[in-house]
Image (cartoon, rainbow, N blue to C red; front, side, top):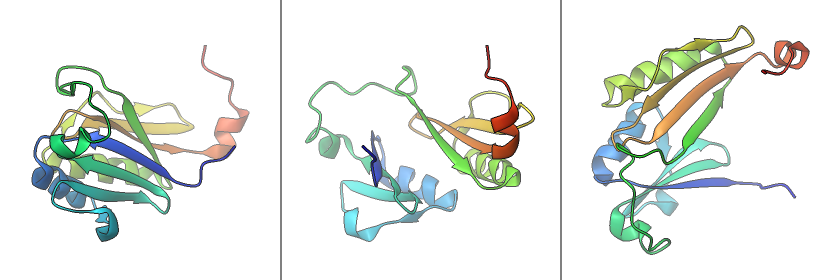
Amino acid sequence: MTASMVFLNLPVRDLARSRAFFEGLGFEIEPRYTGEESACIVLGPTIFAMLHAPSSYERFDRRPLADARAHATGIYALGVDRRSDVDAIADRAIDAGGSAAREPEDLGFMYLRSFHDPDGHLWEIAWMDQTAAESSSPAE
């Protein structure tokens, strides 16, 4: 089986603020899937983040919402084509109201930075040299 599209569905406290945050990172909004209670962020040609106000999110999952600022809810990792894109996106995230999650990691074949968005969701931006990665030994 192969998925042809990915939709991450995330609850957010302030939809307008979250939408502005992702637009500040350089991502576009898909208007066909955006309304008053949700916004569709285009992360890639077939990768999207659906940001939902609590009332919208509860239509899909009635369990109590976790506060991502206080509880781990997952790590949302995005790969980019150039090493310089890692720093550019992470710096824009911090400038737009996010916060650095930890120090940058440089593994030689891979470089990554992580940040929390305004709702506390943990995002990771990574660049990988595929040729070097294929020839390196797995982490122990």
